[in-house]
Image (cartoon, rainbow, N blue to C red; front, top):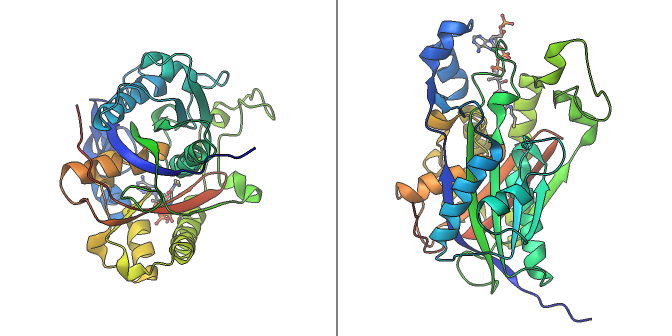
Length: 334
Ligand code: COA
């Protein structure tokens, strides 16, 4: 059988943040922390937090609708949802997102690669397009990490925020603007315990310790590994594409900590002004962070048509990966 071979071309982008903003001052009233510590150690000033009952699916529907309208489309053939915080442990949330968008019936799949989920989901969608399974794929990153951090844990609460971001990919030619370049994707399951929610899954269904149902993080080790892996992966993807770091106009890294982004840029020899940074107002939104940063940078004009853009992520699993594209002419939509 002859499979059609198509490139996946980015055609639309959209983001959505829940309205409630929690700034560092508000957090420091209930946790043993300070605005100064959070700002200087992470670059975060505030994060958006979902209202009770507002879920990953709700946010994904909002961001997904914006991306579809930004692409000038009314429907897609498939939906890939990157999330580590699905509405329920079972089933996956993607079918509910499709129904929420009035697209019930389409292929709808969850991808859980945590903070690398969006880059993994892009690769999954590109595969659907390359094999002719779908011609238009909505890729959404949506996470509600406020439900996964223990409210009293000062080492995780300040870092994470909620939100969703999305892009539409369509079948196209490898040399047109927006075509996703090669991918570099990796995992290291031996280090799963560095960022883990110990209980609630099949290995430990229940626990007497309530903390086991929340995220436990070895921050300093994660910090060092994120620095190294994102830099390595960026070099690898640029090598595969036959490009050099000097040609990169915008580096859109996972927004986990501004110091990680700055350290990656330093290792790569990339001028800091080429970093896209929006973590100060969003915190770490996990799978949503890269598409939200794309939507923000597109909106404020720092990401423009023709820019060579690297997307690079690192997250629990461990997982990490990168891809590259030439930014197309994209119009945002409400
Ligand atoms: N407010 C005030 N003090 C805090 C604090 C907070 N919110 N959180 C931790 N501290 C304290 C620690 O207890 C420690 O105190 P001690 O020296 O008395 O033991 C001190 O600050 C330094 O902690 P440390 O963990 O060494 O700081 P750090 O420089 O590594 O920064 C992180 C902590 C979490 C900001 C940083 O490690 C990080 O960003 N890691 C990556 C996290 C991440 O990206 N996770 C998601 C991956 S996708």
